[in-house]
Image (cartoon, rainbow, N blue to C red; front, side, top):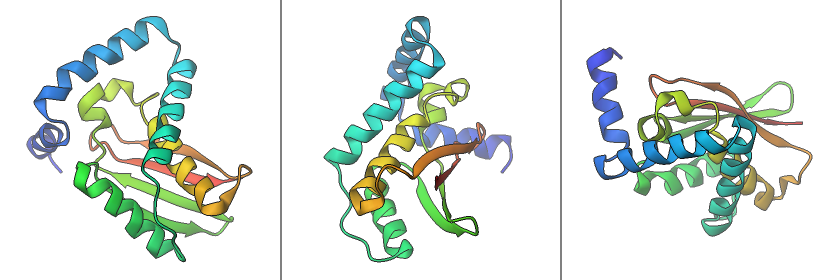
Length: 152
């Protein structure tokens, strides 16, 4: 994607009525909380979100991916791809999240922790337990896409 395409995409990922509010919120959070505290806060919020909006039971990785996409689609929160890794890990790619568009690309140090919390909550509810953790591997500030790994 080129600059104009990315700008258009960002304009669609977060509606104008939320953009100013979320940017002001991010500035206030930054003024009073460390990055570690912000990550913890967003992770806890994500866990609450997962509890409020649980996924249906899934019998396969494909069903899990479809359930995740069905949860995000009505909210315009992008889409998810899942891939099993050789080292007993699951790759979670979340494309076109509104986090960078809403809070600002500079806040990708801590805002993806919301999705870490959501995915951790959904995986725990599916029976994964607490020994496996969802962790951010990469955040793309241009597209808002995030890559997580679910592993030990």
